[in-house]
Length: 385
Image (cartoon, rainbow, N blue to C red):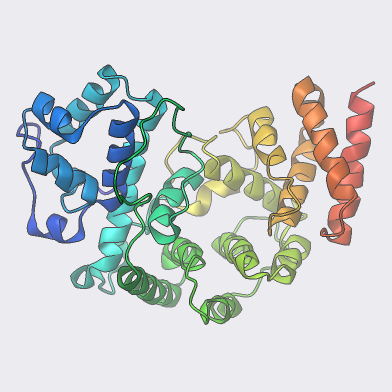
């Protein structure tokens, strides 16, 4: 999606621009993240308000989600981040505020019935390929699970007093409404064909976090509308859709669909590189914003470096992960295409050797994954000589 521009003017105060729509939908993710940043400094709400020259109720409104930080001007939003940095905020937390604003734009749109029209081009998920970090910001409000990109609090962080929310988790009625609207969005995008492919894929991925009893069957039905494509010499949007739905279904113990995708949808140079291109973007190693999934068709993989990607994929060689077969295949494919990467980092070499051995001793991987791991194991032995 093109990031939802935050309707900010170049001038104005930190309380300006609070439209009725923004007040109704709020900024629950950005607000909760702001509270985390403030508490880790540490700084009280009243001191933050005093030093910014605003009312304490404004800060309270931001942190509760009643007021959206997306409604302040760009200049004032930047001023807030600079102020927090100067007061000792963890530097890696400040860029996450922008991701949180993106997450709130998706949540706001999906909860506002007046915006859920059949015009798919208006949806925040339509023309912006989300990364893991931005997606996990959204799912933070759906599951309460803290994003992996959010660093742990320093041991010196004071404990909260009183019953305060530990996450920006939406109330159950709002979560139910959001998932219902996302399902409707996915079905509208499905009828739009290729023009709605990115919106369909990203909406389906978020719907996989719905704990309703019919979610698995609904996802399976949506998958059936676009069967797993056979191996092609070139990338297609249907391939991206099949990959995403297959990984989503593993949340419900459906491993067979993913294994079928690996067998039928991977193997050609174009599909293997598309898979690695997507991994690089998903993990934040390809910093270029993408307006569609077409970037996966870059057969040269010029936008990312193999060593950082292998480091990230190595962390996913975990037998407890539902998509471990895809992770194994991705490591095997990366090493096969870039064999020199195994000898580039001694610590990574040791880590991979341990993880590969653990997986080979397990009984949770497919026969194909076992063959690929044996090849990786052999490559590790050769590269250590």
